[in-house]
Image (cartoon, rainbow, N blue to C red; front, side, top):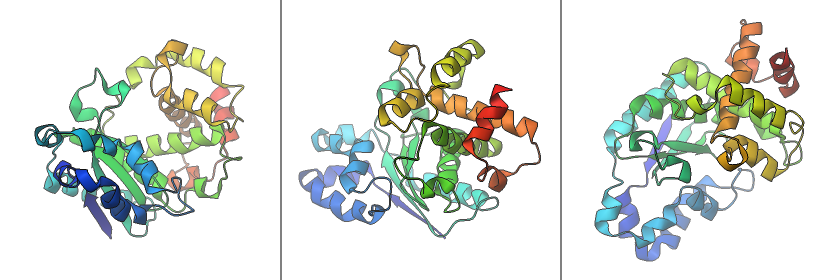
Length: 268
């Protein structure tokens, strides 16, 4: 069973004067001491929800999406993912897609972005008229994180290294791009030449669990010669290299492969 909850711009506008109490009630069920984010405020900040406190009705209304159509796409994607990965009841919370800096020069339909806060617990940010292929790809990506069989839930802050991050995101990319068209806006910035430069920077940091190092190599910093989302592009290439070498490995099999194996095959 799938449960979809929409935080519409109208909801947020209507509750702008008591937004904290409204979000406390609605988001608290999504956080526990065992989820990645343990306080509801962290989720609200991740999706920039507090910006709606200062929006006019017209400004808030510009973020409106078709809840019926988006609900249909989420249901379809969840059911398709269940053909390959095990899930319990999945809760999908939908927020307005407030842009991040890297969205500045991108078409609004591909502002969709997501987060998984534990098994069967997904949050998605939706623009007003989302590209449907990109939306389904993003949901499938988060669903790969959300299966309780994913070994990421056995990691601790000290063992969640950059190599483990590559495995987590590479697996999610490989899964979602096997099911839906590739409309990743960041892939063209990750040329073979850029990939080589990136690998030379990252290869000695794969065992690091330092948050700053992981964020740099995951999300990139063009000022430091690392394109936005470079880590996602690289992680996907890790899985392409590995599955070319071991084509018999399937989605559930890939969950059990150690990060060092992916990196070892890549170096070959």
